[in-house]
Amino acid sequence: MGQETSPYRILGRVCCGGFGRATELAGVKVRALVVTLLLQANRAVPLDRIGQALWEGERPGGGPAE
Image (cartoon, rainbow, N blue to C red):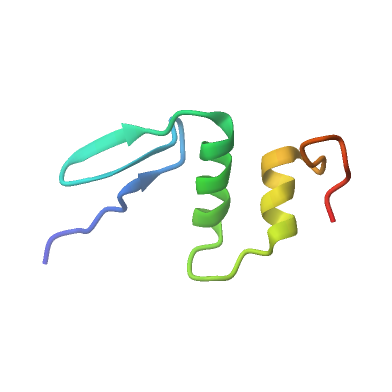
């Protein structure tokens, strides 16, 4: 059997793809979300962890993350 590769790349540029093509993900928040979810693959990711990854503990509007 051939070696399977992940359709995601998180070292260097954050990319996702398939069918032999990779697309670089634009936007800091999009990349942070995808990397956070990929690092916790096949597990539920708590909203506070996602919020912390996206806003570094500060929600939009200045309120603290719950």
